[in-house]
Each structure stands twice: as C-alpha cells, then as structure tokens.
Image 1 (tube, rainbow, N blue to C red):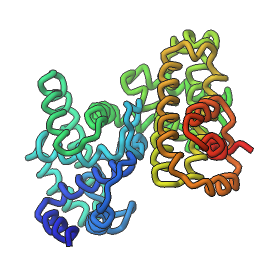
Image 2: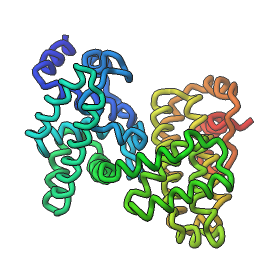
Image 3: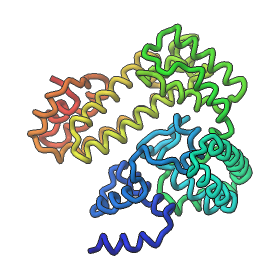
Image 4: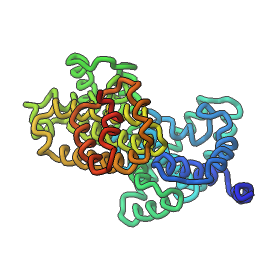
Amino acid sequence: MRVDRIWEFLQRLSPLTRSCLLTELERLEMCGVDMPGTADLQARLRAELRPDGPNEAPTPAKYFFAPLEPLLVAGAPEHANTGRIGRTSLTPIWEWINRDLLPIMARDYEDQMRGFIASNKAKEAQQTAAVFQTKVAKSLEGNLASAEGAERARTKLASYTASPSVYGDLVKIMGALRAREALAGFGKALPDKIPKFDDAQVDKIMGLLDAFRKKDPDAVPFALALVAGRLKTPRELIRLATKPARSRRAVDVAATPYAISVSMVLDQIDDKRIALRVALKKNRVVAGRDILADIDSTEAAIQAGIREFAASEWGARLRDIRAKIVADVEVEVGRFPAELGHILQLRGARGQGLLSGLVWKGRDAVSDSAAFCKRLIGQT
C-alpha cells in the first residue's frame, strides 16, 4: 500500500524527473547503499521509462549524448576517472540542461527531434543533435568560465543528484563535445580491437596520439580512454608512458607526454575497488574474488613496469586505494558464512600478489576471518 501511494505521487512528476529519480536510485545501489523497499519502485520506473531495456528506442537525449558513448563508464565512481564520464551523470545533467541552462532551446530541440525520430529520419536527427551540441558546449564555456557561474551550476546539479562526480563530468562533457569531431576521427583510425599491445602497436598508437595532441592537446585524456577501450587488457595502457621514457624510473615516466595513462590505470583499480565493495555487499563472493584477483594483477603489472613507483605520487594514491580495499573487506567479509569458502575454491582466479598480503593482514584483526580472506582471493 505504501509503494502504491508513493507511485501515485511519482506519477505527478514529469517523465524527466522520474527518469532522474530512477538513475539516482540505481547510482546509490551501485555504491552499495542499502535502500529497503525501493526494488518495486525501481522495477515500475524501468518498465515505464525503459520498456525495451538497454536497446530502447532513440530519444533526443540519446542523440545528444551519442558522441560520448565510447567515453562512458558504468558504476558510480567516487574519483575523477580521467578521460571517462560516468553514465549515471547523464540524466541529471540532461535535466539541468533542460530546466536551467538552455530551457527554451532545449524545448525546441526536443520538439524537432521527436518529429525526426517518429519519421525515422536518422540523418536529420543527427544533424539537429550536432547543432544543439555546439550550442550547449558554447553555453557551458560561458557559464563555467567564472567562479560564480561554476558555483551556480554545482548548486543546481546538486538538486538533481547527490553524486560527488557530476560537476566534474559536466566539465568533461563540455571538453568532449568541443573535441567530438577530432575524437571521432581518432577513433576511426584506431584498430577495432587490440588483442596484443606489443612494441609495434604501441609505436603505431603513439603516432596517432602525437598527431591528435598537436591539434587538440586538452582532449588527450579522451583519446587515451578510446585506446583503453580497444585494448584486450586495459591496464596495458601504461605502456604509452613507460615505452618512451628515458628509463623505467617513475620520475622519467612522469616526464613523458602520456604519463597520465598511469593515473588512468589507477582509475581502473579504483573502479574495481568500488565494484568489489558492491559485490561483497550483495554476497556475490565469487565475483568479488575475481575482481580482487584482477586488482592484484593490475598492481603487479604497474610495479613491474615502473621502478621506484612506491615513492611517487602514484604510489601514494595506490596505497590509499589499498587501504580502502582492506577496510571494505574488513566490513563485509566477516558477514559471510564459513561454508562459502568451499564455493570460492571452485574457481581458478589467482590473487597471490602484492595486494593479497595486505588484505590478509587487515583481516587478521577479525576473528576466524584470515583463512576466509585467503579463500576469497583464491590461494590454495
């Protein structure tokens, strides 16, 4: 009865507001926040707003955000995520554009787009979206140029979402829209898949990046994100920083044009940390162990590729991520029944590297849990 009353209230809100609410509920769920009683509401909202699931019919918003698709990252990052944009930020940003940034232009855009979509005129819809993308990018440049304008945007966005990263994503959207044509050309020049990132491939990709950097240096993080998306093993992105370095010492790697790729690989670890926390909170123990093993492998690859890493700023950030992982494991693992250890040993993921010992050490403080942690990360 309570759900029905809430649903009756939600029906009085605009579809855009209901969509924003659904996105916020999903974002909180991905953060591992317990929200008792919302499952039915989320199901009703998805049935209404996304009747065909992820392959639903095109909308004006989908056309607008289409150039950003290769840069989107799922989940709810609590960090900057260089070169990537949180998918959960799109709905609140779209509502802010419609209500606060360019309400009249946005209304005209939606009216035009509905006609093109209904008539199946994809080319005209893409052209109209491109015009509106340019208008939004220019408006963002003007509004975010001053401290007052930036603060207004932060305040308004906070009324649509509690996400700590949404303003940063807005700034990145502005940059990605300005560079959308250059990024599209760069993406077409890349191989569809890069199964082996050997020296020849690194040199080829670096040549493309060098040409791109001369034209649009501010958009290099987005170009690197496109490269990472084509790699079979995304952590190999650090080779763009280590290969041209004078030596493998961290100070020399940091001096290369694409040193930011190391930070982007650390972003990958941080994303996995959040995914691990959610998996453990939802008792997805096998998935959690596999995520932890992947984190361990990525850390080992970084340590092997960069000398004196621990003494660098990157090393300090990695230690912070490690500490958060240990804290999450301490909170969550103690809840699991011992019988889950047997299930965990049925799979072959390995987690015997640098992070493993730290996690075990953190869990030794919790009674009867050290052995469980060893099973969690697959040691036999």
